[in-house]
Image 1 (cartoon, rainbow, N blue to C red):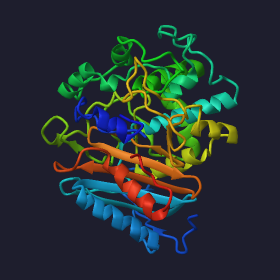
Image 2: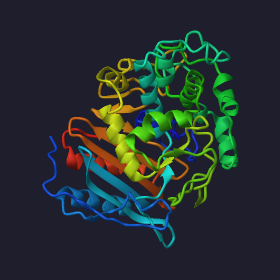
Image 3: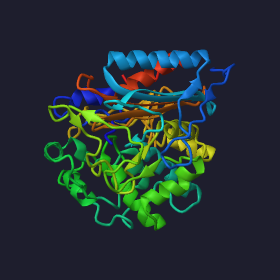
Image 4: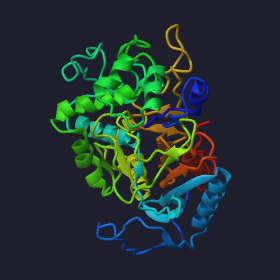
Length: 416
């Protein structure tokens, strides 16, 4: 689920982390010819496949996108690339290149791990609760998380915006050593929270910015107490069902619904399959999600446009007070407390980059990105998997950046 705010953080921590954890966070007119989708019916038992490759991509932009994807697949020696691009909700192109496994072609409806995309959905649901006056963003969390240190100072907003000062267990050497040695281990929230809670806070809650997976684990627990429902049902009722995300779901086990896109990685020093490594460490139980590339594009559009939110809540999603935060102190180095600027900052469960609204999960051989540019109503979704010779990092992110440069020149989707 690993999800980082910028490549600067990835570079700064490259020497300290293991390869198991890849980087993970942080006027276009309507087409003159509409891509014709296929009406493929498959044996998957879902009543027909509703995420299929574009049958005849006549739109010049579709050909440009596919050319970018094919070149990148070869350049980065990728196993697979799945992609979907829409404008104003209308398909430009959907396709899948390469293989899931040897001899098994990749298909657009194959399911993959979506990691931190769940954070965008959780944040959207939180803002809905605020609109309904069931909570306030600045409510402190001691009534829901009484055992959390500084719970009387930490607010829902701080958990959702990574301003609590809690350490990130994903960067803890002790956690990394255990994860590398035992990738099939099941982790409980108590197991995970033990790592950040053994450290002092980086800073007083609300006074700085630093990324921590612990924040959304705790936020999920608080939301379950507030609503009396599991975080999986919370997202299903408030986001997945209203948006028609039929193939986005939580998985309490390492299972991936069929058809599954298989992943492989060299993170432990040798190339091996990682499809069913246990993802319980990535976030709270109930928020460990899988999806397909069509749902990912729909999620990008809906979250990025604030479709489920009031205008006021949407503005909060894009900047909940994080712009201007982030600075090195005597207790928090610049590699941890990163500066949040208008051009690149963490919003409420999303990363905002030059106006693009982004989530970019990358872990255990899977990499993906959902990105939406409100000014162009342009949604880009890409998923990729690696061969033994693929470079490190989120290659799906690089492909999306190149697509954005072609379709929205002058508004770079760049995390550099």
